[in-house]
Amino acid sequence: MTPRPSAAPGTSTTDPGAERFGAGHPVVKLLAVLLVAGCLRPALTSVGPVLDLVGADTGLGTTALGALGALPLLAFAALSPVVHRPGARFGAERVVLWALVALAAGIAVRSLPGAAWLWAGTAVAGASIAAGNVLVPSIVKRDHPGAVSRVTGLYTAVMTGFAALASGVAVPIATGYGWRWSLAVWAAPALLAAAVWTMRTRGPRGPRGRADVAGAAAPAVSAAPEKPVWRSAVAWQVTFFMGLQSTTFYLMVNWLPTIEIARGVPASTAGWYLFLFQAVGIVSGLAVIAVMGARADQRATGVLVSLPMAAAMAGMVWAPGWSPVWVVVAGIASGSSIVVALALIGLRTRTFSQTAKLSGMAQSVGYLLAAAGPIAAGRLADGSGTWTPVLALIAGIALAQTCVALWAGRDRYTHPEPVNT
Image (cartoon, rainbow, N blue to C red; front, side, top):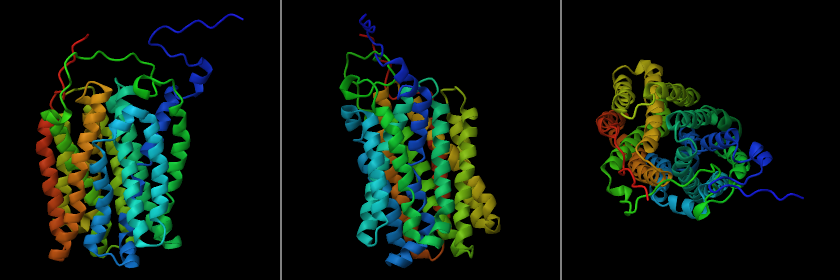
């Protein structure tokens, strides 16, 4: 029998038949990424529409409910800076797989009777989502270096779509089966995504244990040590843009239904307002890809996606009868802003490693800012007896995001171009 010839250095030895249907196939890789994207928000957005039911059942007050909504964001902030380390040691694909299994477990646990399970499961779910938040954008950068904006837009559209679906069906499920089942059903998609994602862990092993499913040669590196991403001004600009847009998103996700209910809107209708907010975001997230184009300078785009949120909040204060219109405007701003924020992480870095580190930094500091939002909103509402200060807070954050966009959108990199060795 004639022995199989050795592969050339830097090429994959994967059997062609396995490559056709396995982890290296572009369709399988993209499908797996999109399935993970669909699991990263329902565990969060399914809570807001039933927050009143959770409070009535558990006895938690407005401030405590705000803290419950902020808990996953605190987990994001705590774990995002270190997620790249196990990703480098064990492989990003393997860590994402473990995170999906833990996410399903956390969702199931928080739906058990007892306040302790609610808090513990929410913390586990938040920690699991943090891993996906950080590693998936870096995987997109590695596997699609020439199409970061397009793939990010598609990934974000799926993420936003499932987030919207979770918001829309939360109250109907809670009405028929209770709020615990309304939260628990989202363990199933996480398990499905984990089953598909196992295909991504079967590629040939690359350096440092990473699954080298792309089969690409290692990039050129600099002989000098690379400066920490935390010392880059560009990294901080991207981080603040990420944080400000995340803050407005989670303020809306946690409190929009409650604000509308306080104005006399039925709970089921308020839940569909949140669905509308996120559904519009899907379309705007895809549309902003065309606006971004292939340009490296994204300052105009950053301003364009930031200002509508401030306008929407002003409208909700001065013309509350037009709430559906303002919800649509806010959704346009939110859906497009997250695409720009995630795309900037890839556009402002040169390598897979830099992208993972910037993703961790941006989501750590960014979600720490975002975590303060629901808590601050709860305290403002408790202290004033009205939701107008909360709407003003969201408008102010959106204006700050507009200013930051003028810096984060510039054609700059977090690190200088490496010297070939």
